[in-house]
Length: 151
Image (cartoon, rainbow, N blue to C red; front, side):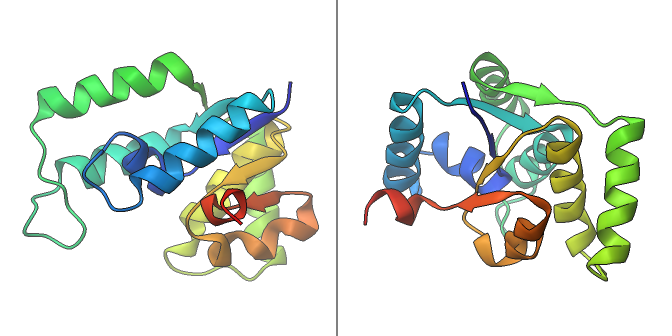
């Protein structure tokens, strides 16, 4: 069974039926599941998920959800995703990625996700931000988007 890492934007939309991208994201996840894939997320994705979910709605990108709601959503993710934890190997991968690809600023967070994928031999990433991750295809990461499942 091939493992697919669900990026933070995917996780946020899977659990928010009011989001305009909920349908396409859910459809892509269902399609991958039908193809026999299982899902994972990194510790970094979970931290980002908590950040966006609890950030005030008035703040950029924040959902302003109650802690109890966010905790239930995280518990749901824990049920259908394996959570990948950082390791010494992922740190070494991350250091190599940021130097090789001259990564700066906020992009270091994406490199951390890819490093965990590489350390855990996860080949595929489902994301809404394919442009941010394309640079890592040369490292063996397959980047897929929900749009690829509706075409």
